[in-house]
Image (cartoon, rainbow, N blue to C red; front, side, top):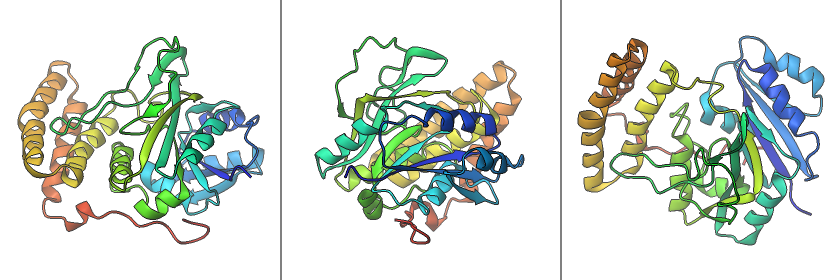
Length: 310
């Protein structure tokens, strides 16, 4: 028995994109899996269209948009698998994607999360993700290894990575039971970095597994540089800092983000005539003023217990 894999993806007003992802899963080599689609409060009634064509898929409907973390956590509450594979709905999952990930997770009790190699869907020979660099605790930024490099096999060795990629990550159920679910206060962006930080803090390792591959249609849901994306990245970078950066590094990071990085980015938006991005950036800062003494900021969610749950 290889162990059941629960595949969870979120749909939000993107019926055709989700159709394409589900079509890509029709020929998976791995035999023991279930697919869970969470409809995150779509206005176009996407889930009704998808349910007709995919009767074997488990559908979970939310009356409101819970964001990336909240939607995945809701799907997790309906999952039965020993392993949970979180993937974006704008990905193409290949027939051999799951097998190497499960095999790697089974190698050691210390391995808690694994991620495949990710290439760009519209540039299929080009890498998006081959692991992450370490996070700079002052700037709260890190880099994708191999990003926009042509894939010539230069990153075909499996290795540990400080973080996983939110577009495709497989986690052991027992790890989620110990660590808890993703913090849904993030809504979008930085939630997987926060989760990976918590997973690592419990002694588990995160691995990049190049024998597994998916293709990703990057930023279809939020746009390359949209006000939505700008707001949440700005807000959540500081939120991650408040939750995870300790000691003197915390103060250095806040100073950098508020006094150095912030004004520089806002000036660039003004020069480019992007008032919408400028205002989104300001809103990201203002959120923290309104939650300056919020004691819930550092609380971590516990695993879901309703339905099949973890």
